Amino acid sequence: MGFPSWASVLVALGASVITIAIGDFIYRKIARIPFKPGGKACLITGGSTGLGKALAIELAKVGADICIIARRVKELEAAAEEIKAHCINKSQQVVYISADVTSQKDVVRIFDEANVKLGRNPEFVCACAGASYPKFFLDHTLEDFEKLTNLNYLGQAYVAHQAAQRMRDSNMKNGKIVFVSSMLGMLSFAGWATYSPTKYAIRGLADTLRNELKRYNIGIHIFFPGGILSPGFDIENMTKPEVTKIIEGANTPQTSTECAQSLLKGLLAGEYMITTDFISEVLRCTVRGVSPTNNLILDWLMAVIGQPIGSGYALYMDYVSSYLFSLGISTI
Image 1 (cartoon, one colour):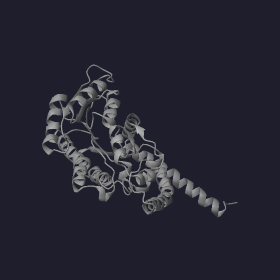
Image 2 (image 1 turned 90 degrees about the vertical axis):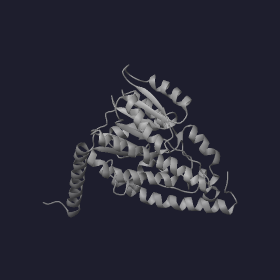
Image 3 (image 1 turned 30 degrees about the vertical axis):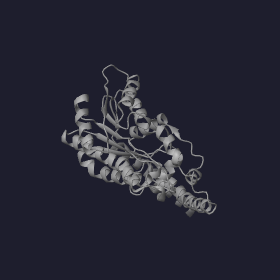
Image 4 (image 1 turned 120 degrees about the vertical axis):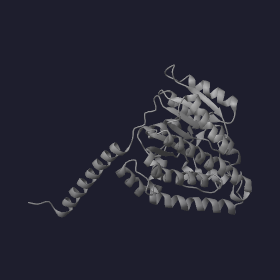
């Protein structure tokens, strides 16, 4: 007695899923190069506060040498002392360089000085420097667009260019460059006209370099955090429009340490697109495009779930924006 036709379909489907899962597991084991930060020279821009400092501390805890970059010397000195307190051996180095990542000359100097201070070119580079000043599009000045583009996009592009150039020229094996985008690099709404486009641009740059720099064995990763409790978050809320707050809803920001731990966990797993929670993970799967999966089957399932949710959320955003405007509620 044979199986009924529906049972045969289920068996075939189950076998296909298992085969795909096994194939994906084997592929990830072969294709993903494990990140082992111990003993590596790690350079982090925006390293005196927030996510940058928290990531430096997490890397120091596993034996990395650290070079942090920011503009203010006093903040750098204080951050360096805090990072040193988390080092696990006396041979670890923690150094800092005062520089402006929007200056091309400063970015070149960063890598020249880092090479001298650390005794080698950085093997891991994370571009954390950035800022946001949420307002309505028409409330911004033209200078605001230039300022955020220079810092949030060009500041990361300059750093990545110098990092990749030094890694290539020194024949470095398995160098890593990490870009920091945002959940607002995967979706956007009212209030984020100067910030979100720069984070989308970072995604485009990371997608390009992930493919292009494979010839030099340079690994590219991109991080999509949500709100981060930091001095920058407090400044952000000073100008954030009411409609932006309502659309965001009860979004609980994470601490810098929590975000840094999520980033490091994703790096250790070899993930290309790294997120911090379930909601951003569903969003990643929904907008992933042709980027590598973190888990083929789970990514497919979450994309199926995320598409209708995303469509509903878009309707909600449009309703909130239009309704509040009709009531005259458009500012803080």
